[in-house]
Length: 112
Length: 238
Image (tube, rainbow over all chains, first blue to last red; front, side, top):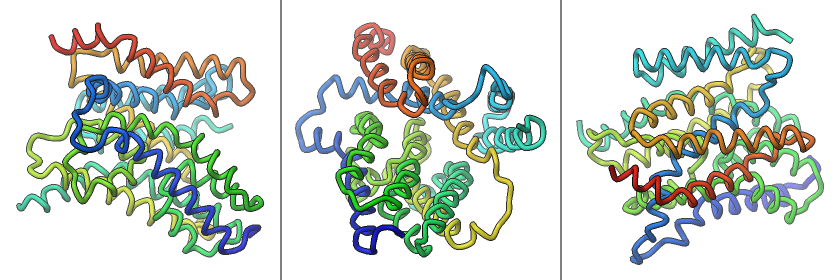
């Protein structure tokens, strides 16, 4: 421990408060009885689609496509997820099997 | 089944993938914090109050350094500013949450948000309780993971390499579900290709660029959606 107990508590609480503020900021902006602007209603409709796309790319941001495993474990596992989900439409099966497959691939097959 | 029980049960089933992810990712943080000399309840305390995966890893670095609140604030904003976009798209969904509202906003992590992005099943009778339980369960998994990691993480030798793929797989499944729920795919495509473009540019031109591409990616996607408002809305109303 570099910081003493009180410094540590304050640091953690400051991080917590700033995070809460960021999460709540839009709600503060558009609270009360005023009608929500049309632009925000529109964003509410389209942003969830776009953000999930961004989050997938974010998860894959450090995949090495020019060397190492050439992103093959990710490609194989995501393809498996896609096929499973098209067949079964069961989130648990798709995510569970996909993850197990990925773990097997990076632990046993593509070992670097 | 009464509506509370139904909301609880449906929320639990939906959050099982997140349980797997959070137990291990939380444990990773717990181990790290314990190694920095903090007793286990500090991990519990962080999980309860901060409740932000990527930020808690940064928090360990901050705690290892000198006491510096300004740096803590700047780092938190840099890591978590993406959450502003999440709230922006949930104004309507969260508007009648009442007593649950503050807690659901507090618990709006990437993973909880991704579940909120899915269409709420029609059979759920009390949607507000459903949102609340999703948020609560995810939070409890995270607290448990962080605490367990700090208590026993150092003594267990289990090869969990690749377990973080559970989040990638979950986001991808949600992406598929969303894709099937609409005929208008432009927003999803803007999200994927806008951020991909950003990532490629950052990886080529900036040292360690993949760390910094997220916020510019959000901005580019937001801008594209703004510019494309008219044509997208026209297709949506068809």
